[in-house]
Amino acid sequence: MKTHVSLLPSLPHFASFAHDSRLGGIRINNTTITEEELRGEMEILRQLRPTVPIWFDIKSRQPRVVAAERIEEGDDWYWRITLNHKVSANVEAHPEVILKGGRDREGHLLGLEEDGRVMLVSSTAFIIHPGESLHLPGDPTFDVLGEMITDIEKRKIAIAREAGISRFYLSFVWDAEDARQVRRLTGDDVEIRLKIEDPKGLDFVQNRFQKDPRDTLVLARGDLCVAVMGIKDLLDAHRLIIEKDPQACAASRILLSAGDGVDRVTITDMIELEWLRGLGYRSVMLCDTLCHTFFGIESALRTMEEFTASQTN
Image 1: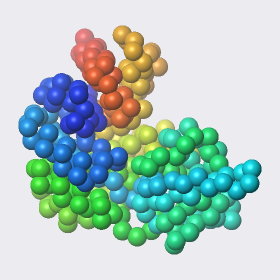
Image 2: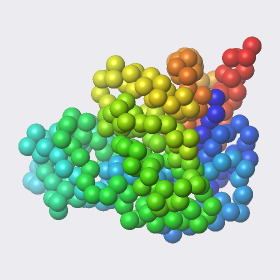
Image 3: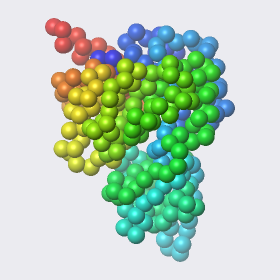
Image 4: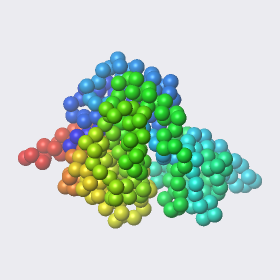
């Protein structure tokens, strides 16, 4: 299987994998860095001259926290969250607001202000930080308004293109027009991996997706496992994406035990990898958390080598 990892060039272990033939690609996730910091990352990239293909992750219509203020009201409190996009939702139903990749389900929507740019959320189990994503899977009316790509993200795309990057991941794809919009910013000579992360993305794949040789579907399981609640629906999503695109990539929540500081991953992780291979997946991307350390990536890559060898013996 071809393996992609997520690394910033400034990380101390980036150089260890920049020329690693075991990797199919390195993804630059720009969620938590500024434009100026991104320019610094591109300069490091220029100096290291990696031979592993570099992919830049474009953040599109996913609601993310720009700022979060805790508001005290007597013995109670709530969050006033400024978002990167305007949103609409059924406030009267007070839908659940899910954070921390599904680990924090305590908050509920209390209100929207400033035309949907500011969200009021009841007390949560954890502190909310800028850059975090949030989900309202229980509200079928929830929608992200305005342009798919923010002005800040457009400037980051321009920085990536100036650095010579011609491969992109695109988050929360809902339609073929999304890829066309990216190419209007980058030019036609780019490859795009289309991340399918919610029910609207699955609807696009099921009913309107037509394969373009420049594009590849990505089963983005990190957010998809939060946005899609039913077990059967999740399993069907795994099958649907590889059926529609035989080159599709399965991303996130893969080989997580490789980061636990043990020599071997769990049997559960190995069985899941075999299940993905059986469905037809030949490309995977490891999640950001696993890639934070040299050991996590190295352990996962050794496992992938052993797994691949087992298929030929």
